[in-house]
Every structure is written in structure tokens, then in C-alpha cells.
Length: 171
Image 1 (cartoon, rainbow, N blue to C red):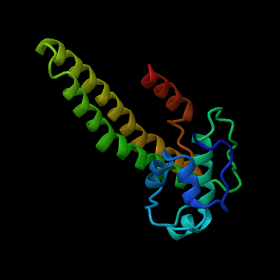
Image 2 (image 1 turned 180 degrees about the vertical axis):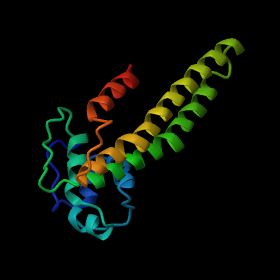
Image 3 (image 1 turned 135 degrees about the vertical axis):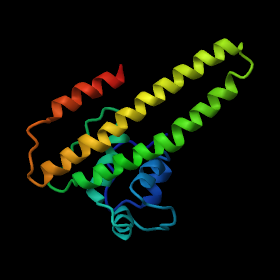
Image 4 (image 1 turned 120 degrees about the horizontal axis):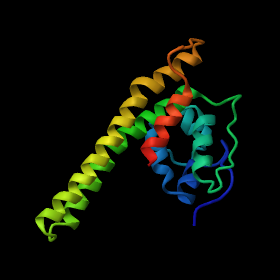
């Protein structure tokens, strides 16, 4: 059973992981390796140059089924969040999608060849769409957001364009 509720800087990192093991993926995407002993979240984040407020916001958001976790804008780092998202993209494109494809190929090995071909083609087309979407975010959205953080506004782009494209990938 995962812990519900808000994790804090003073909680031991091991308790955070013990209460919600999928947070190991969050840690890795923030660049936090295992081996923190009895240190609390704040100490571990500081040790690995990770913004603790952003880390905890993501952890609390992901561990809250209602997604009512507020974003603490006074301490939240958009740069840290973008780095987290970029690392998430790398994980999905370089590990997760190839792993799913491998398991899919194993699962359909006894199917008729024409059926197996259609299934793999469908998956590969889906993975290609995910790749294109993530590349779009890497090349357009993230630089746009970083520009906004520096006070630079691009008159040719706005976040509603991203929202429209993001809704299309979900379909």
C-alpha cells in the first residue's frame, strides 16, 4: 500500500521509497542514485544538486490519486522540472518503449505471421508518434518555456499551440 499524503523535506528518503517504490523512477529522473542511508529528502537533494521543492512537488503530485497537490510556485524550479521531463523522455524512448516492443514480440511469436506483422506495425507507428511528440517538446516547448523564464517572449508560439498538439497525441 502506497503512502497517501504529503511527503516533506524532513522525511527520510528511504521512507519515501519504502512507502511508494515507483518513486525510484522519479529519483532516477532527477539524477538521484541509491545509497543515501538515513538521510532525509532535503539532505539527499542537496547532496545531488536537486531542487528539493520541485522534487517533492513531483513526488506528491504522482502519489496523490486526486492530483490535488498544489504547486508551490514560490520555491518551484521550472528548470528542474524541464530536466526531469527530459530525463523521462530518455527513459521512455531508450528503455521503456524498446522493452515493451520486445515483450510484445515474445507474446505474439505464435500468432499467424500476418497478424503479428500488423500488431508490430501498429506498435511501431505508435512509438514513432510518441517519439515525434517528445522531440517536439524537446526542440520547441522546452526552449520556449526556458525563454519565458528569461523574460523572452516568442510571438510565433504560445502554450495553447502545445496544448492542442498534446491533446492530439493522447487520441
